Image (cartoon, rainbow, N blue to C red; front, side, top):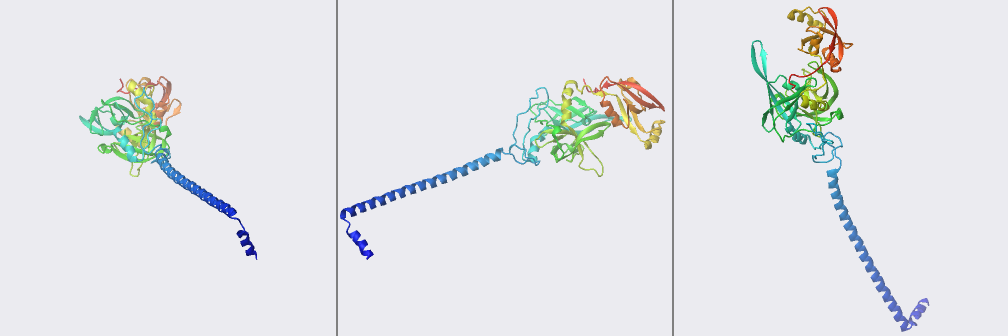
Length: 425
């Protein structure tokens, strides 16, 4: 029954109504088809935009990563995240118009030790000296060698005083095979520094660093001329100690300690940081059958402080000077000295050796074999300590020195002189 009614309802519809129904249905279908087409177009557009954005993002990320690798911090060869770039990059240096050396505000950055070596080795030179030696009735020429560091493009070279001390001629050998006769500009015996000059221009030179910023554990390079013929030799190590108080030939010095290998001939060579900067001048090694890996360098900041005086005057102005050589005699050595020098020494202590002609010591009346008991109110316990007491004085200062001469205790007054090396103008 119900089905018949539905049929009848359809069958009773007029043709006009059927046309309108069909037309509406057709329009509806066309509208749906059109909407569907628009949706597909929009979907395709969205997909294409997404793909394009993805490609653009990947490309941008790649470019950004490449830029990051060239500009972001990386871990340098010393293990510190301070290196600003992958390539060695020169930065603006400070304006040292009145100094012979150049300092860097930041320094350069390097990937490897090999890069640092390549950038600095040409600033390290070999030094050979000749000196006249008198032995008994004969005089002969002796040779010695060491190292030096070029600190200016026009040929100023820093080395140790003990490398060139007593030299009648000084020859500097560059790494390119050229050699030059060097002039001694001046020196500082106390700091064991000498400044040389060769007639050359356009030389590779080393920038000066800041030794006050050095810490134990810093990676360092040593470049020099060990044994006198192994030129351009490199050793690598770490700073193993700061402010080491070392006595060399009665000169108390405060030095940097390194475990980088140091050998005879390295004296005057370079101690270099990872920025390729000069932070010290090698000057000593501890010797002994069981001693290895202990070398010392003069902090470069101490050297900087005296260079201008050396250039201007040939020496460091204002250094107090007593004018004597000193020697410490132990109780076990007294009998030997008495026998060898026909003396009557009774007590161990610090004795005066040679008294310089015209020195403050000679003017005050000091003589060889005087035993020094106290200086300026302080008990003397050794030659190095006495030298330190002298260094604390000022030129022109009046001090008292207590000595024992042939068993008699005497107090003398000394007006401190100024240390002027024989090489000074």
